[in-house]
Length: 298
Image 1 (cartoon, rainbow, N blue to C red):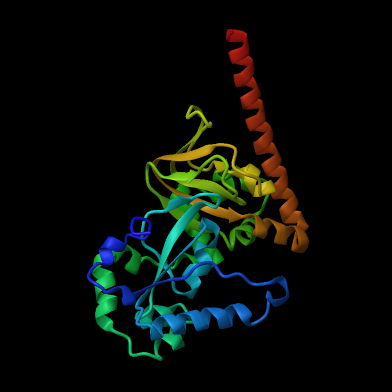
Image 2 (cartoon, helix red, strand yellow):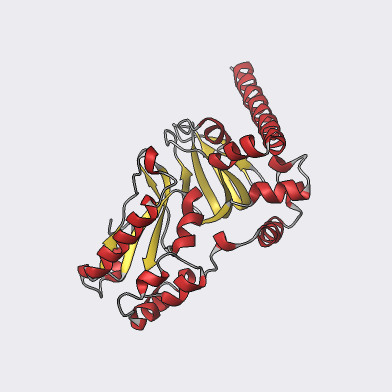
């Protein structure tokens, strides 16, 4: 945990300053009720009453936007969790009332129940300046997200992302509305073989290599490519390792979004599924050609 959450950076504070929140478990009958909000508020107040100023948690890439909306920030390197895949360490600076109010966090009022310490906010800003100043990507509207994707791809996303082929401007913006972006460093593993995942990733910059279980490179992808599409469709274990070979940024697509479109807007979902089929067919053809070439060589 010291390495995962970069706790050495907090050695100036006593242990009572730090709290850790694990994933919430809500029974089916209580989902959609006030129970999750009440439990989250109770956890916040409990940690504050015990003297905590920083709360740590983690989440998969697809949920970063949700955590950002309630006040958490990504601040440290991503890591691979056994059986859960890529995880993003997140931190909640409980004294940063200004940030919580600016994003309309449900913690904003709770943070005022105990007098905030501005020195904590100042310390975090100096220790993690990038995290402290980074805009909350999850609060970008459709137009701002589209402009950001255009900037990263250096072209219209309709032309730079094969997954969006056949969609018009409004359809594409609506489909990507709840997507989030994730920055990665060269050497990061986006996923490893055997991980359970339901996300697909669109490369906005950088490069990713796909390695088989023996470590051999079986494919290389760059800007605009969709990777992780099999798990995205079937929520099955990853079939290969995904290694970032150059600093990259990815657009994270969650299977839940696709399922929602299948129910509410099947026309858009059908186009996306057709594009995924074409991508899978092309990759199958490439794999078959490689296998045939090797067999012929033997």
